[in-house]
Length: 373
View 1 (cartoon, rainbow, N blue to C red):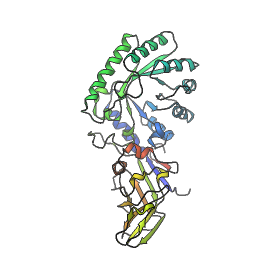
View 2: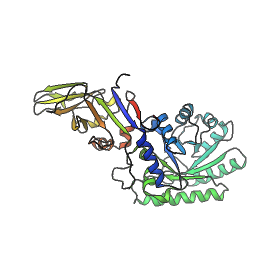
View 3: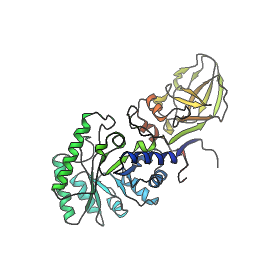
View 4: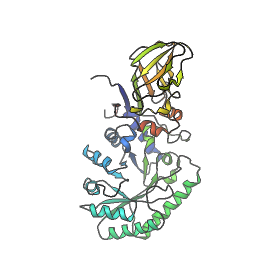
């Protein structure tokens, strides 16, 4: 096998340990591992399989297409999806044993009408994030419609859930408000004769820091991949980043003082130095905002990215360190050996670590180590 030009090495043992650690945070709750957006850039099918092997009862995805892809890959366990537009493939999802989310009366009616058999549906209440879900009178109408449809044998309401807006700020007053609204929504369901088995509210941050939200199930996303939900979030659970992104130097050259680097000469060498060409760019998910700001690791040392990030290439300043074509370049990893982390890249580009790992492009080859690999 030829050496991949761009390689994301995925540590399945670390992934399994992260899931076990997160499950220990909520020992009385079931655990859902979220594998949407190609498992945050880690590879949906392999991470879903590893999550099941690590004890994750549930998987969660955003779209029906993501859910159907998992079924086509052989997954048969409990699986929830939550984001769909009118005309989505609800019937195919129901036939595949996928649980759907209804956020309005109209969506519930469309699910029921499209299903060839009794669908399993969870209801989403908007408790204050103001994205998907029903709130106020719309929630009351959805509850009434769901109770009527279940009584008629047309649907099985299996869960009720919501999503927190400020869980990565544990002391934010919105957290208490959303919990209160959620409890009232569950009470409204009970008053209508609906008592679904699953109530869930906790995301990664709440799983780590807010036990009052753990309820029947917790949904862990970014934390399962070892990345903190927020850089300054305090918690005692040990999590290890799962992905190491690396490549090799495509060229090394010595340049004189005054040499400009990359488009626009946004960086000019102020002394003679050695440059290394890294065969990655914004076509692979490296943000242009990293230009002249991010660091990489070459030869065990951090080196600065200099000049503008191009579509397929970027340049690092190696100084006077010995280096050669083919030397290993680590863009980010767990940080155990001094390499930058995804959070370091997020800080350098004014974004969040979620985006750093999720935006990796199609030229990245994923290699899986440990676990069932």
